[in-house]
Image (cartoon, rainbow, N blue to C red; front, side, top):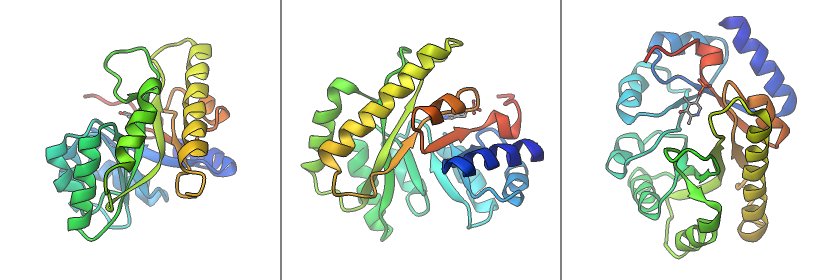
Length: 221
Ligand SMILES: *Cc1c(COP(=O)(O)O)cnc(C)c1O
């Protein structure tokens, strides 16, 4: 595990790509072992699981939320969450902003976009992006800072398909950046790429990859 982590970290550092170590299903002790290797950003996809682990681990950890997030659970993570990768509705945006303000902070979030074919994959489709952004801009959301977008490819062995989906996510980012965030340097993040496809994601312009099993090993759950 150690060597694998250091190898990935070195490759990513050379390319200036940020690493989210996806620790879902792994124990606090497993996370601490990777923390001791130098990793500081960890990603979880269930609020309950994050709530159990976060108090047991160092405050220096920057926690990212990478799964579907129910509005009524935002309050449990609002005091410390570093980046929410899964913003996909106006009601969630309002709730994040409200809870951030209650905690005297601003919470960073990525708009999750949908390019994959699977119905289960969440996110805003390309045809709905403008409306979504305009809805967000129409609201006062002082506790929310938009940092970029997150996307996932279809689960497939077809590398060409994966590559073309990552290219599509990158185009969506460029479109939003030039249309709505020209004067906002904070809109700088493209979260795409996992254990099986992070190299392709980086070729397509990813700035942040989310890697679980390559670092922690296979998940049993
Ligand atoms: C689990 C998960 C990952 C990491 O998957 P691996 O294949 O283990 O690298 C990345 N992103 C999201 C949204 C996930 O749920």
